[in-house]
Length: 454
Image 1 (cartoon, rainbow, N blue to C red):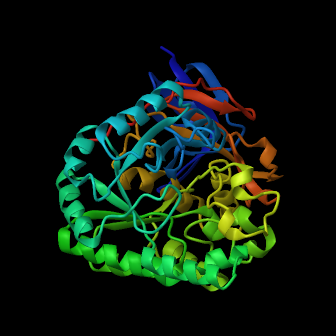
Image 2 (spheres, one colour; image 1 turned 90 degrees about the vertical axis):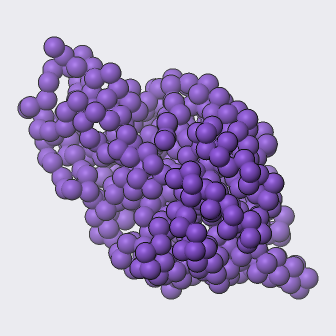
Image 3 (cartoon, rainbow, N blue to C red; image 1 turned 90 degrees about the horizontal axis):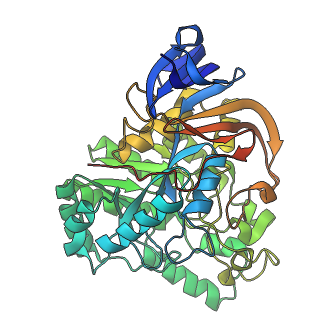
């Protein structure tokens, strides 16, 4: 009897190694076999991968899909269309929307919107504020993947709880078994330097970066790890931008704290010089750091293992909000963030091509570890028999230069415009359905489904 789908003639790569001339067989949305091409069963549809590389579906555990409330920037449909085109099979949405995802009914609204229009599978975090500590068990019951606290000022101006409330939140979240993540910047430090810089007339794009110094990130990481050590909570550091913060994470891991961390392709690719080259287009929070911090981020975060995951912080804004027409104008009039779902795989494959990390290590950080950290493994990110048939086929030899007009988000401002890469996603499969192939998103809006977590 034939199965639904077989992909043949590829190299299957997992953290355990590489299997050449191999493939995957799929039935009813699940993986039923992984192995040599000549040993796979017959299928109703056979895809010849043309010698390319097949990896577990990419999991991006940090995107801003902007829905509900800010759909003029992005929504579930456009964000997940971009995800499919970028080789990403599962995304996790951030809670700084309108309304913010701070109670069960708001979470349920976000899920309902996703079920209606998403192209790939998805989940969402809920935010913790001073006003909803007592709702944490109810939010857990409603199915949140995890929780987030915004420690420093960021897009949406979600006020952080005070330190006592954070300790209480950690205790409550520990009881759910979920993980609490942080936008880890010390708000008081940032507010002080921002006010000072504005008063002094310092308004260049690099001044925004310098108003958010490394110590603001490092201190916040250290403080949250200390709180986690006290409470026994599981914590996560989103978008680690500096080597100093990665060193703080490493110290926490060495003490036995259950702390995980992610970084993004833009922190690994660019140094703060990009602010002089591309201006407010590259404005983001935390900011892109100098070359010394970047090298330590690579050494401690990637080579030594302090960083668990690669994610994007995909954050679409309109060209007007990013001040594209005047990128070197007053930085305080611009907004932070840019898209990343269609550049994360090419950036990381380019690093693989350069020998900066192995293909296996890339797969571990971009598929396996995000799913493990957030409780979706092995259903996501594993390529194990019996799990969701999510996988990404990449051509590691494809050389190309990004034209942002080719991207699929509603708003496509990115500092990666004009950057050249070696490697690209060519086919994206979600639960056995091909959602992207031959340069086109072919999956249906509404096919994507919420990932269930216990």
